[in-house]
Length: 570
Ligand code: NAD
Image 1 (spheres, protein in one colour):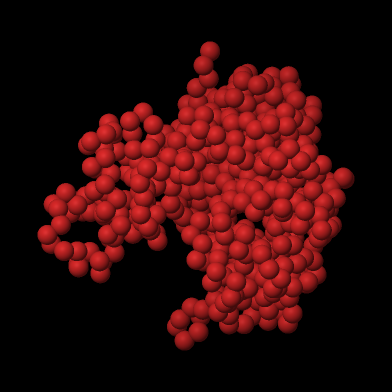
Image 2 (spheres, helix red, strand yellow):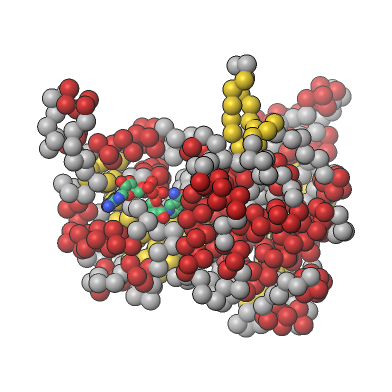
């Protein structure tokens, strides 16, 4: 019988649980959100004459947490009114209601014993065959199912959402050997089609894929600070948008996530990892210990690597000096190396510019990236058998534009491997085998991206991408016309695509020229025209100075298109 999800129970209404509940409500699903009951009445309840057994008192914890979540920015709900799809309750009075649910998602405190105790209670009420999953960040799934019934274990796995769950695309699915394949297949499809996630199946290894690699990457940057002496502002400049990572780069990301959370994951990894050659990278450096001691944990404690202050009625952001541990005015950081890199429009080509040379910046990048490349190569087959999953997980979980193997490929797999080895970074043997065969991590074939499969020593199409049309993959071989700001790409089946590639895809003369050309081609030789691009924004609108100077004798067609395009919002 086809599985249907009509009602979901989310157990735990903390940072993750409440937001996961909101995301299910977003897609029209009824949600039961439970948390611990409040045991005592507070002053306000006493004044209102409520008794401890009153539902308002019993459900105070869950209701307060849920209300807090609905006020978060960015908003976890598509529309505030969708909160009426969520019913709240508590583990003592309402757990029996999970019998009506098709999927139970546990998102309580990260503690094996407490989670197991809750599962014992869940066993008594869940309907056989219903899905039961955990949002754990790293407790082994195999340990969580100890003592559980066959039906429970067969329908149990990890579903690791990233924070904030509405916005971060990654959903890691972690089965145990007991999980039914039907459950994995269903959750993968549901995650992608209904929750809008990029689903990556992981092995049951410490911190799974994205956090294992992402936390390694952050910790390795912390350790490089000692060697290179870069400041907080400089590191965020070096590890931000210039290398395809979010503006929050390294330190601002720590402040948002909370330094304690990062340290917790790093320490757990250090304890859990036995044969990891880079285990020491997860050691907490002294400056982080100092910050932890002072409770400088980031946004949650009001200060971390950055601190917002108000002076003369204006707010100002200060950054932490990692030597004196004093907050100082933010520096305006300028690196000469960035000038050349910024002139390279495609990120894919930028790494070559940034890593080439012997300046302090070049050397920092070499050490940072070569360490990361070696690390991810050595994680296979430990954390996954398929290299593309590492790239996919880190890109959708940490919002990087390119994953480690994609960056390595852009630098040249073979050439980079010998540079790495010269500098003492040891990659896994399979990379040596691959380059000996003159193969790379990825290749394009008939517009499809293929990855190097270690097991077959050959390239394979990334599963699930067979029917995707990606302009990035077609651009080099199927462009039939282009100018500085627009390209026309033949998608096959008589269809062409007009792509913009000006700065922020603003509309100026090149795009109008491209539009006219595309209409002309579509009308004469093709069946249809699509206007789409894979930029961060579809278009920031028209370039105003150009727009005003556009000679009035141009064709009406162009004006109509320009007007229509500048109105399109994506
Ligand atoms: P949280 O501390 O915000 O919420 C935990 C919830 O557990 C609270 O609502 C609390 O009332 C409840 N709880 C505490 N003690 C309990 C007990 N004895 N019995 C039952 N419930 C109890 O935590 P969170 O950040 O929402 O994390 C929840 C889960 O999600 C954890 O497994 C965590 O590792 C995982 N996770 C967290 C993040 C994140 O960024 N915070 C990201 C991914 C996964």
